Length: 234
Ligand SMILES: C[S@@+](CC[C@H](N)C(=O)[O-])C[C@H]1O[C@@H](n2cnc3c(N)ncnc32)[C@H](O)[C@@H]1O
Image (cartoon, rainbow, N blue to C red; front, top):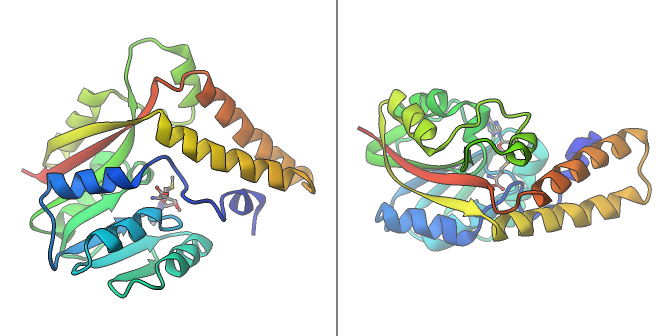
């Protein structure tokens, strides 16, 4: 396993988010009963497990492109009979799903491109909930530095425009800001410290990059955010 993948294995999750974000989306879409849900880009399955427990009668199908993370998600949800996890490409979902949940992953496909690809995988009335980097203020050098490797960064209106371009309407949104990021970076920092003891040159480079990411977040923790967006084909 590469140094990068070693760093990002064994974490509680691979990006900021909380179980209450999942519950908010389920409430907002009034989802309950024997529905079918996909966790697209599930990572190690933190939200997959939350979905499986919140919707005991539902079928939760998680997909993840990194085999070791798919394995972690499978192990984490092994006691939940309503959850299955597969190693695969979230760009080619079949469905039909009542909800496609995607935390911190849709930007790998692009908001418009991903939503367009998922439209045929949604059941009638089904929706997508995804978290996406969002610019909260105008000119903010610290925020721009943090997101330097994500040139598609835009504000909420820009995300709404990408949603519309895919033929969806944005039903609601809320911000993921502050505490969930602190929790995520706390666990990543602990992993960096643990791995730094016997790090070779490749691992040291990876740890330095992640340490810089954490330092950049610490420079603007009240302005670095994801928007959690709920969208439905219009
Ligand atoms: C930032 S992580 C978020 C993981 C998880 N959703 C969470 O919030 O903890 C993004 C995940 O999306 C996965 N991913 C990216 N592109 C993918 C694709 N085309 N198919 C499946 N998974 C993908 C990555 O491997 C990674 O695990």
